[in-house]
Length: 316
Image (cartoon, rainbow, N blue to C red; front, side, top):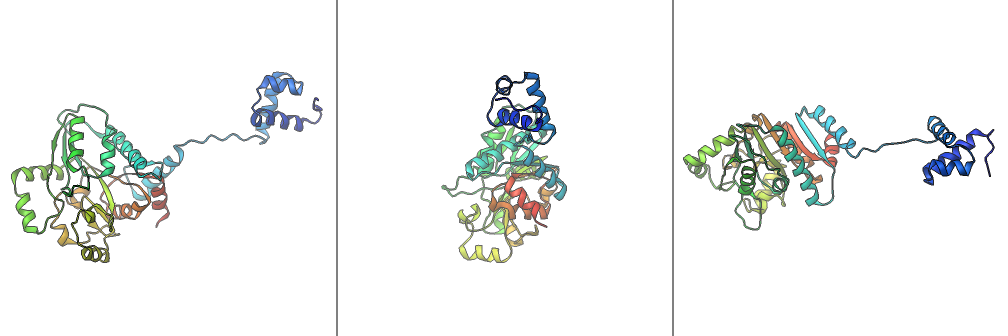
């Protein structure tokens, strides 16, 4: 039965329901309402103009874009990439790693020295490498690794893979992250080959690293660098995060100068001085650690996820 034309609002509403809720096309609606097809088009336009129908476009990247802008402004960062969060650690690390490679592709040029740390997130990044030859490029490992077999931190593998991908020379540090005494560190780093690698790390144009949350589950603890009593003592001293195997407090200050003197690799003040220092870390448990790194000013580019970004923006 045809709706009475004098009740225009009912006709507009019915046309809108048939089109948007029942998925009828305009020809079908014209037949059902006994109006012309141009008449249906006018009814649908009236429905939109009157606010009966509201069309919303949901951009899946919009949330990330807003968070990126807000983080750049709040923390005075050069680059921010925010990826969707995910309950799967594997999926999240893959997203973070892919974002890192995309950013590097915009930054890497000839004569660049790229410094890389290690960890599962950076290992995930290597799965997204896009073959590219860059003239006179160097890749250097920023800090020593761990030797415990069951902890696959991919320390040397990451630098080697990146070097192979960009046709660059990789310089590795096949050394422990932390040694027993400052004297032993001095002896090791005095070797001319090690000294050359560390010099390259200190002078890297781009430094890429992860941020770990310090505690019983951190890689450094699981690698047996600390006894249980030492872990507790460091926590009591305020240790909340590690960057390139160096422990920092919530305000970004070095937690233990004595421990720092036994750590092999780029120092945090040297990291801060790199033209491009890029932190890659995500997951709810990393928010406090990332905040500590921001407080110390150790990086000016951040790749993280939406949940962490939201937490960082909600903190004073």
